[in-house]
Length: 131
Image 1 (cartoon, rainbow, N blue to C red):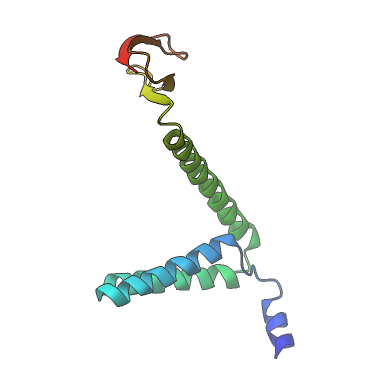
Image 2: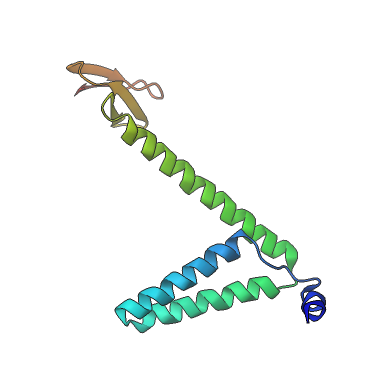
């Protein structure tokens, strides 16, 4: 039996990180459908599961590899954003964060300095804020 499965999967894409994410997403949708009794989540979970199997059994390996690469890129962007927010939260007692009104550049200034004039390093705009 193991040999039959191995021969069937020869030349097919198989499993990757995006498929693992999709399987967890489909299980989450089925769980939400079970708790809320909304059919929408059941059908959404089923669609995600079917897409996952389509990707797994696909013979178009370059297209599936490109999808997985895009997934890793988006995952890296979300992780980077999350780490930035966490670092900002961890240093909230030491620094205050402001955005430039002109170019929207984020800046941090030390807390407890009173009213200070802040110069944007990107565009040079100066504004006064309380630190």
